[in-house]
Image (cartoon, rainbow, N blue to C red; front, side):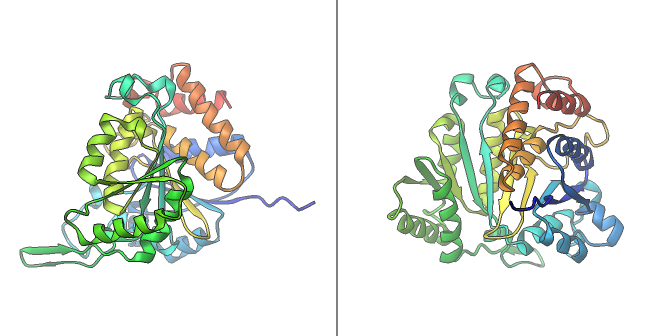
Amino acid sequence: MSEYVTPRLVLLPGDGIGPEIMEAARRLLAAVGDFDIEELLIGGASIDAHGVPLTEEVLDSCRRADAVLLAAVGGPRWDSTDPGAARPEQGLLGLRKELGLFANIRPVRPSPALLDASPLKRERIEGTDLIVVRELTGGIYFGERGLDGDTAHDTCVYSVAEIERIARVGFRMARCKVTSVDKANILETSRLWRKTVQSLAEEEPLTVEHMLVDNAAMQLVSRPAEFDVILTENMFGDILSDEAAMLTGSLGMLPSASVAEDGPGLYEPVHGSAPDIAGSGTANPLAMFGSVAMMLRDIDMEDAAAAVESALDLALGKGLRTPDLGGDAPTEAATRAVLAHL
């Protein structure tokens, strides 16, 4: 009989509402298992303490972990037009790059209890159960950039190998259909993307369709239930997944995972640091709880993951509504409501 090894987790509260929702996540983790937990600084909090958004020490701890849970980074106090200034977001981008987190996975499944909380009509979103698979370490966010007088440039670069790697993730996660999103009528990188995805699709027992990103943005709000897996590059995926979050009623409901070919994954809610409500005790912790569930599943704690997801649905079914969902439940009450249903 093999000896049980306590999972090692690195928690990165970050900025804004990050520490508040991370505290809620710690309570959830304590309720579902035993973990070796290390809590460290990233983003603006790390800039304040160390002058950089991500230290080598934090990076080394993340590399040794079984999983990394991140709350949020950023805020106006670190905003600057100085291109040389340290920015909180550089910590997250650095973490993705150094851990090789090339695939971002964002499930979008509105809870039955929240079908009327979405800005879209119930009949339009009913049956929606899709996954956005976003390439995370290439494209315009990681390309060469510069500012020369009154001219700036950002370069979008993709290789066949990068496209094949993320396409295989999308194919693996699909039940029946992959919608590959690009801008192949304009961009050379998108034409390479489409050609590469189509070449791989010939080996797959799936329906693979290609859709221009502007059309995809429209279809996502007009017929979301017809999507299965949306496969796309970095910037398009960033925009489309935030749009998809509103199908669930709030950006505060959407979890995500960023994974590598090997090594620890990074799990985080899709919402930002929400500095306007930081410290008010009103942040919605449910996207963080969903991210915890994704993390638990990936470290082979399937029962705990299912218990968390069930508790979320039960609490919402019993009427739990945070301010972003049109209710008045503060972070503490939302946390207790989910814990009560575990």
